[in-house]
Image (tube, rainbow, N blue to C red; front, top):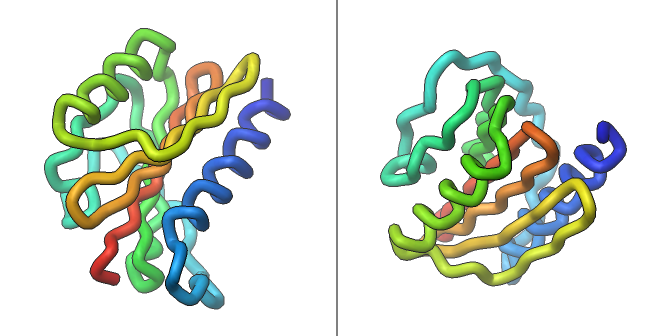
Length: 132
């Protein structure tokens, strides 16, 4: 299970970089995880549906144009419901990759890209703004 989640995080990183086409890659990020107890409210998460589950931490890498949120206790039904809500809110799926125990999506909507990786009960979300 941990191996699948690690692979999911690698795929999330690939999807993040794929969403940065045409720009110079971020250099020297020193962002560290910060434990959270609630869904963060900022320009990266504005208008996004909050996933069902328990917030774990964020990685605030906004100096590099990216903000990531991680949740646990997200079951498959909650994951699918969250993805459906994103599509209802105007996000378009640009790429997806699935394995036996993980799923990864790259979605876009009006000036931002969202990479999401789910494995078991863990969810990683990374948002990149085009204006960065």
